[in-house]
Image (tube, rainbow, N blue to C red; front, top):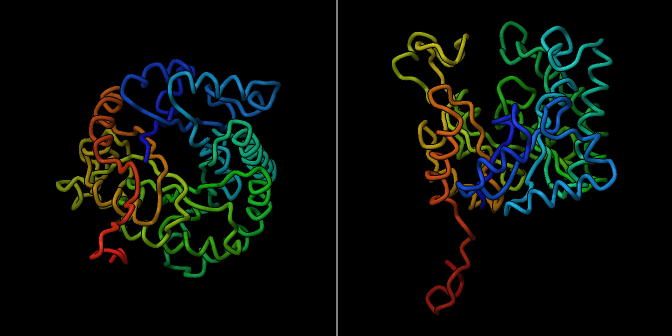
Length: 326
């Protein structure tokens, strides 16, 4: 496993400047934003001339590679919301937003292919998150299943054509929000080989799910992992519960994102389960912790996680008592 860095943590800075900042801390791989207007990497530019080669050369010069491109923003438009909620991403009619999100995501797969990045991370979106609630209309969520299959199967076909995987980030504000909806999504696209998941333990904890169980159930379909932690603030849970609204900086907030080691994720257990299902990829550090600076997180995350990463899977024993690797 490798320790990665999501350069969107510093989207206000050029890509190479971010790499220079983090290189001394031992980060080995990069997840780079690729939605339109992100300020670090525009997919249309990547696909021009030898730009992809130059980017790869620059990244390699710092001893790193590119593990993933992120299209968390534009991809949200494919299933929505397509109203005012997403005007900050792209302004247009519902049809125009869906088209923009679809084209942007496919172009991100092209750019990932050019950069030799195996994975694109994003969201499928969902028009009405209220369907998450079973009351008063219990059939609501199922109505989006056909839409997911129809809109994403052609996209996944393009991903397969480019030799790139799409890793949906499992998130409460999306069509895939827990272990069961993740398994169902695979069924809906006939277990398309291009579809898998980005595991973010903080998002999973938000709904009280078991991170370790999710890893065991999704197994080889985990294509990418975010190194992000979460804290259910015990003194505030009786006040607001897990679905509390409001600014993350509120002192009475019942849920906070944290950097790894400062929340309630059991990282040794998570890393163990990842290893057990054969994951040898990257843990990409994402900073959304409002209690400390991003550079605090850069330093502390590397110091905490690097000693825990499993470098290689168990190779078995060859002595007589363990000849069958029991």
